[in-house]
Amino acid sequence: MIEKYDLQENKGSFFSFVYADGYLYLTHTTENINEERMALGSNEICIFDLNKKIFLEEVKILSNTYPFDIYFDENNRNLIIANGENGPTSNHVWTIYNIDTNEETIIPIDFSEMGNDVPARSSFLEIKDDKYYLLFPSYLVEYDIQGKKSKTYNLKDLGIENAVLITAQ
Image 1 (cartoon, helix red, strand yellow):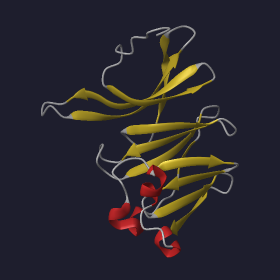
Image 2: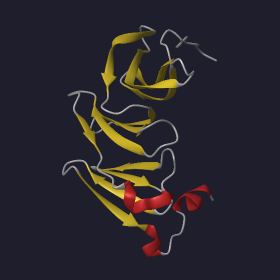
Image 3: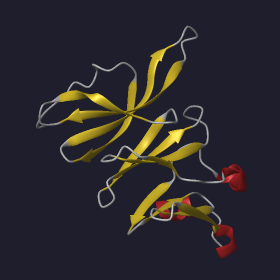
C-alpha cells in the first residue's frame, strides 16, 4: 500500500469511482438512514482531490438518484453514470455529465422493449469515437454523443441469446 485515504467524512455510501485530472469522482449512492432503517438515495457525485487529500465542497448534482457505476470519457470530458431509478434493484437510467460545462444528458433507452432481459444493474460499456455502446444480455444500445440519439439492437435477431455470457467466456 502506498497511501490510505479516509473517505468516511461523508455520510452514506460510495459505490464506484473513476479518476480524472487528479480527482476521484465517487458515486454517492445512498445517504443517511430513515426511521424504517432504509437507506435514502443520493443524487451526488462527490469529488476527492488526490493532491490535497480532501473532498471538495463542490459536488455534482444529478437529476436521478442512486448513482452506481461511473466511467470517464476523456475525449469528450464526460462522466457516464448508471443510476438506479428506485434503488439498487431497479432498472437504471444512464446519465452523461460533462465535467467542464456541468451539462447533464440522459441517454434515451426504452427498457420496455427489453422486458426481463435488463439486469438490475449495469450493463457493459464501451466508448468508441463519439459513440457509447451499452451491452445488455440480449440488446445492444448505441448512443451517438453528437446527435444525442440512441438506437437499440435486438441481439436475438443476430442469433445471440445472451451476450453477457459470451463476454464472460
